[in-house]
Length: 408
Image (cartoon, rainbow, N blue to C red):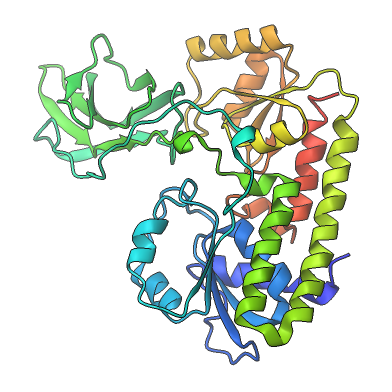
């Protein structure tokens, strides 16, 4: 088992880090820790904490409410890394802002740990191909009307083939005009769409979307900000490597080796901590293996394509129905599409990520005669897990119990 002292330290640091802009150890209190370590997002934070224990002050950059994919490092983040002994992240496919961040760092003594380095990940995921897109975020609007329209339903990112649903909100309007624009194209009005709801099936290129309110005389009275629909097929690699308990062990070993390299005097301490946590990860792996060893129904349906490593490691099939938003109830046509998938695959449960059974999830469940359950992708430590003082191992065991509802 994990040393109790170290285990209790994790929630305390997480609360301090996440609530106060994710900067654990910066409260002004003195610390006996000799090392300063910055970590990009939750999984690498916990893995680092388990190995470093009380020998390091560890900062978490991306906390609750932030999206690790689209996070924008602050000047404070850069300053912290410039003063740190070690920086730990997962991959450029997950934290796409890493390259730009590291180019801003002027710390020649900094030990950089890329926890996906050298891992055998190719066999685990077969994503659609993606195209390079411009970093241009500034796009001219299609109207001169004021920006009074609110657009709901834009997620952090989508995969190609997802069906996104957006909804516009404005106090007074007779009808709507919806416009889309590709990176290299011009604005195009979507024919036949005059309601406040807009559905669109994505391809492998980012698009921009804008909603314009029109009065009874045909005058444009208000418009939304330009919304960017970011398509992230992860460059044909699934970045969620931490969801595989076996690959997680390899990541822990990388962190252990890096810590020993920069602090050889505490080698035995880091080695003992790492071995203790690796043994727990191995036990978790065995629990998954035993649970699914003789299963006949090996498919599960998810809202977001994030569980490819679990599927591959345990010979399961992940079916994604991407594009659903917890803000907007899906249209009858979208529910019919999901209902057909449910029927064809004899699906008993549809899984939604972190946050429990929202009203949208329940609507889909009621219409398709399925149940709903939550799977944790652990890109962040969710509010629900933090409130219960649960961490990585606990969340992975909750995932196991949830998957048993489909896989049996």
